[in-house]
Image (cartoon, rainbow, N blue to C red; front, side):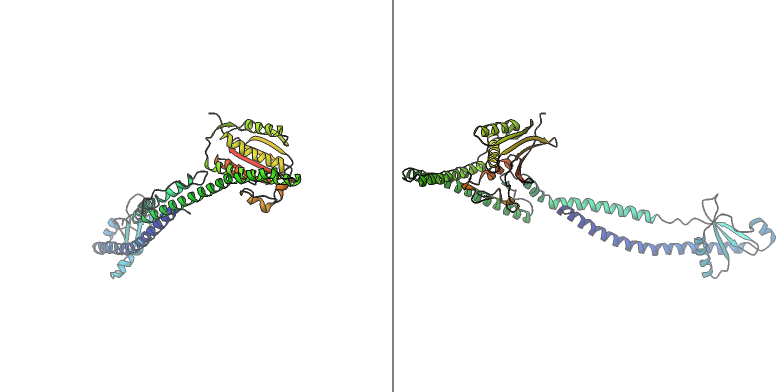
Length: 418
């Protein structure tokens, strides 16, 4: 009911049916007056026949025995016809008494006229009421069906161009790029498509400009950082030299992370079928060999569609986060609901404050601004991981564990052999 097409159809159908109902009511009232006139004509004709025939029968005994009965014709009483004929006879000035009955053996009623010598029975034609109500119902049904068909066609003609917007929204890729809309149809729709195309082009240019700026800044920082590193090597004070080199190393990590983020958003690695359990097991073994606190809890054989190098970068960032800031990473890979690949990375750290949970995927965001003093990181690991996972059709979520710790979950659609 919230779609434009449904509203157009309902409006058209309701409007046309209201007009038809009013026209039908007017026709019905006019028809009622016509029916009453027909009833009066019928009663007048029958009463005139009665007035013509009744004087032909005298009061002698022979007429009574041969033509008259002792009472009305037995059968089902027809009070509506009786009252109609009686009223018409009184209007004509006759005091004859009539009774209309419907014998079970005949298809037409009989009018019994009370005379002085007895009851005279005459067959009268049945006044057939036209099947007006059935015809009216059929006519109304046809009008309603025709109205619905016309309304559906009209709504389709109006909204068929709007359906393009729905199809385009469904084809937006992982980068948020909207395909160019065809600028066709009515003037309003052409204007809407033109505005959306202009907006898309501007957003794309702005995003590309941002990426070029970040990439250029990351590359341009390397030259002055190299000069600063050389100068720091010649400092006499060993404590100052170590502090300078640590800061330069952190700047180098930030520049590398920024360049990597740009590469993830601009470069495309083709997806392929991967045994995600094998990829993650290899990552965990590599990090464990580097003395990182990584524990494999469970590994089930699961196949997904993803780019191997990109997936490795994403999972590696998440495992390093858990091992570095959470006191250890506990990794699980399994199949959920027989259709979803679930990668879970738990830790036993302090977790993330709920008020900061909505910002953890922002570039360069840190839950603790002073964390860089106790551990490495540029604040881009989660942003890069989220970019990779969502680009390949997955979903990355974070949630605090109870009583402590953080759970990082990656969900991918599982692939099965045909």
